[in-house]
Length: 189
Image 1 (spheres, one colour):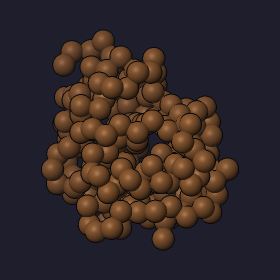
Image 2 (spheres, rainbow, N blue to C red; image 1 turned 135 degrees about the horizontal axis):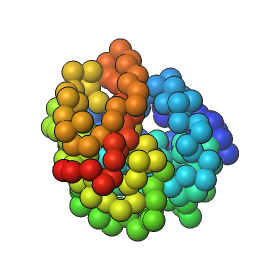
Image 3 (tube, helix red, strand yellow; image 1 turned 45 degrees about the vertical axis):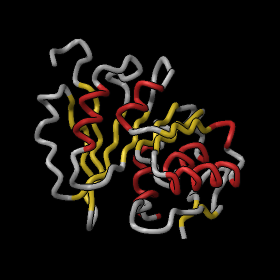
Image 4 (cartoon, helix red, strand yellow; image 1 turned 90 degrees about the horizontal axis):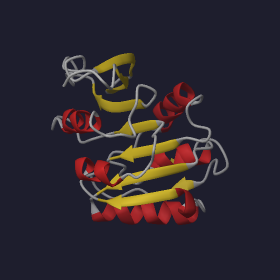
């Protein structure tokens, strides 16, 4: 069972989509992640890409994020996000975009985004396409923190070439979190 770990919706259970299309982030990994993000979350604009059932974005709202974008295109997962936002009474803080992750990046209408979290399907290089697209988004600056949840063997050697800096890497038994920022927005492609 997935639940909200901390904040105003603490301990509330969340629905998850049946099957293997989504893999919710385990509670202990989610707790470690949010301990590392705690200074970024209060008042933040948070983007949850490939959001599955919305557990990460809902956790961010519960811990004080001003608004969270949930980007997902699987119908069962979208239904879970809607139900979870209603159940946690966070509907007014969540914006659900029923789109492909890269296309949805063009639908975000914020002057600045604080945190972008993505947990794409492993082994398909979705993170690479998203990072390439994010470089051109006005709401992404050197102060935007991008967190990628990926398989341990995912290659990120292209980050510098794409204009990013790896701030931190946190490895777990089966996956890792990469904490990334833009090196210099004015830099070359």
